[in-house]
Image (cartoon, rainbow, N blue to C red; front, top):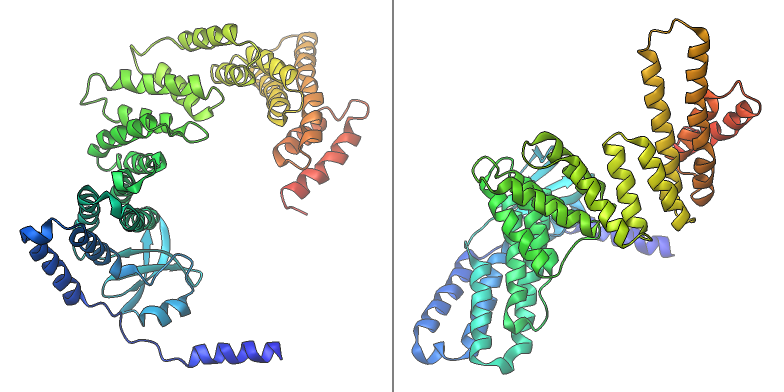
Length: 448
């Protein structure tokens, strides 16, 4: 019976005739906006909070009306039921991704696998959301007792601006998306909102400006301002990427601003101090110090970390960062020494054992590569060098074994284990180990 009812419902949905065109009464919205303009021009009405609340509602409606019936992940059938048949359907590529573009009079939906992946609405009334925020803020100034109503309006504006930022970002419209996130923050910053504004909005806006900077260098300037404001607001992402993107914004200005390189360096130094494990920040520092004259000696980074470790020798993060730094400098012995300290301080940390084993393997690779460029004239010397290489690879095994205990099924760990055991297969018991780990690696990689 249940299946019959569901089938009947499905048939009913299919039987409903699709609306022939998107319905949006632009003239009616414009009439509301014109009335609002007349109301605030009237001295008596201008002094009433209700006038400004209504104005905020009118401008919010003006901004949101084109896409109010659309949402991400909406099924194609539901889209048709909600707004009718599109005026046209054609393939279109956005940000390197191909979609099926459904064009309507006031928005375009981009579908993938039969669902709305993103959409872009027409800007029928430019600046509408900004005016909505201004109106709600004015209403609060006139009558703080209306805070509950005003906050609800501001929240609607903020939520819509965040949604718009996300959809524009997916469409590759980075500058416009950044403006939307910045506007969301402005709505939350109004005294009427009653809560601390979310610095993530500024972070997202800054990130998007960073992405836009390659095509529009002026966005680097704007991005730096937004990211600095996000940091000042107390926000930072869990990986410290805000400092990495701030570095890129300053670095992108280096040809026009003589102080930009110094600011870029400072952004990374602030970031690595707070996030010493960040590979992105460390990579940025190494690249900056090695590619730009006058920025500094990479030894400065080593000294900085050594001083931090001297002040806090039990910090796993600092030892982790030290190991990553020496890896980038191709000093594998110091990388290994650093990660031995990591696993000593935190013997249940998968990353510590995995990277320690990895650095032994990397050192072995470097020694093996050096052998290939050596013109040997003595078999004894060759055999001694080969033994030294194999000793280094063998040293990686207990750490990788431990990593596999802590995180069974990790494909990268299993790949290293099976590769090293295969290399040492002529030694007693090593081929058995290879035969054990190779199937596990294939399984982890989805090969069987």
